Image 1 (cartoon, helix red, strand yellow):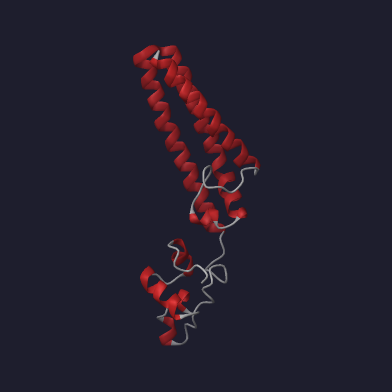
Image 2 (cartoon, rainbow, N blue to C red; image 1 turned 90 degrees about the vertical axis):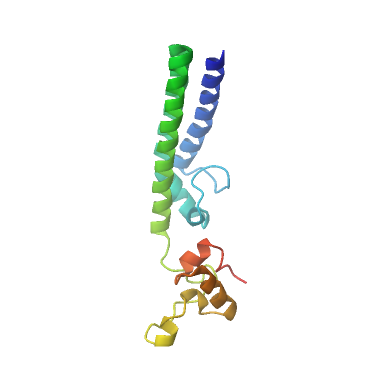
Length: 170
């Protein structure tokens, strides 16, 4: 009886993951906080979210297939062997999904414009010909509040600060 429950759960999760994979690969997965690749870079714009999820979609489809295989294995191999196959399928599906999510997040980060520009209210990069300005963070070029935020970040790029919420518009 426990094998049937495990298999049923795997089938339901496989359908959900497969649905997300299909929506991601076709570009129909809306930007949200629940499904898909959700990093600060991917949630920054609809285009970044779509790109990341198109990259991650095939590995999500593989994950769904692995979960189905685990469910079928659980039903056909009995209690001990079936639960072992189901557990292995879950672990491999998680690894596949994580790989795809990482690849998608990297694709979105690579496609993002360099620096912050006006996207997070940081202004432009400092004039590096001025030695004093060169030591000031690009995030600090607009106001003293931005300077304090950049100092808290310990970084010198608006992209890094925005990941920590330090360069949000005031």
